[in-house]
Image 1 (cartoon, rainbow, N blue to C red):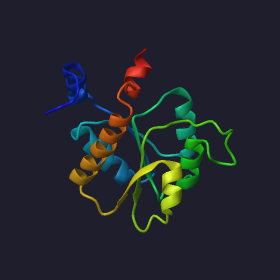
Image 2: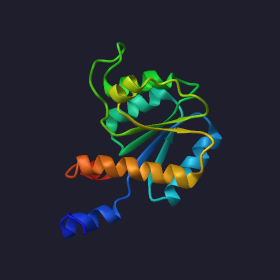
Image 3: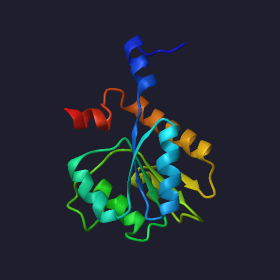
Image 4: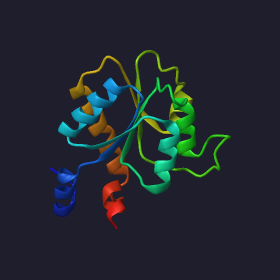
Length: 159
């Protein structure tokens, strides 16, 4: 039995979170961009870390998926800047959205750093689309439970 109010429960069933995919790997961009749309997400893809930083000046996303092997920008530095934890940033957090890292091998991220940076999950390739979709829905569901009154990013952009 759901403990949610009927309107809140209905809203959550109809929510379609917007995922920002950050990768310069075209095959991964296509795989995630198209696959996540079928899995109940809106998607946007950006291939360069500096573009990501600029986009977050203008809008927000509900989830961020970052390719650990990003060649155009150090993925960990990008995450630090998004969280306002880089020595190169002004200290302003650009997003509090959950972050998921995609890694082709060992991601080399210490558990303490993972917690500090708000990395909610690490998915190691090869991955099945169904597993990625389930993981992102789980991460978003946990975030939603902790932030029930926060509007979705696309709802905020329309206001």
